[in-house]
Image (cartoon, rainbow, N blue to C red):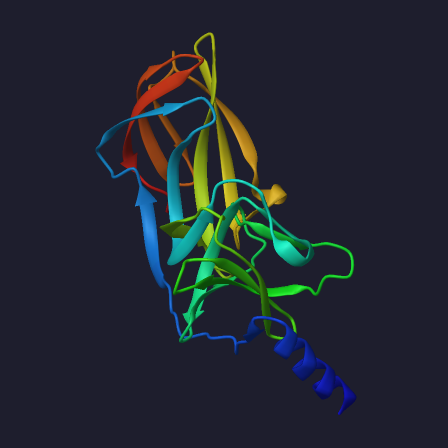
Length: 224
């Protein structure tokens, strides 16, 4: 009873309280890029071939760090949408690659949801007690589509690591739940004087041109 009274008192002293909404559903799609047969260029460190299941979702992107009121800092990155209420768009706090962060300072309540107030696009936070506060109209953000890995998804990718002499180095990476799996990472060298075609895990690529900065190629077959 005391906890309920305390929560009610805090809510009255803040902007208000909001119930978390989970009425937004992202889309899931299989992706294989670049398309088979398309001549493509990749630079050192770029992905040459990517295949897997991705989640495409509405998100906001904050491009730099901001200090909010009441002891909260926002670091740059994406915040994926989880729902809508009457007054707020609601965005979840995640730990994925490219995700933004909200860091509470000492004595500040942990943050449960990031909010965009519809009437003025102010950024607010919702605490673990569903309190709304720390609203700031000076935070710049963009609404974007954000492609991420599903918790149960699996991706494969080839990465260009450069050329020495006639040999090129290609990195193979597997990702599960948007996290690299070290046991399934591998770097392979291919001697172009022996063949201009390189293959790994069923994928087959025609190398058209290559140097230590970039590679021009065509995908003949994607991963199996």
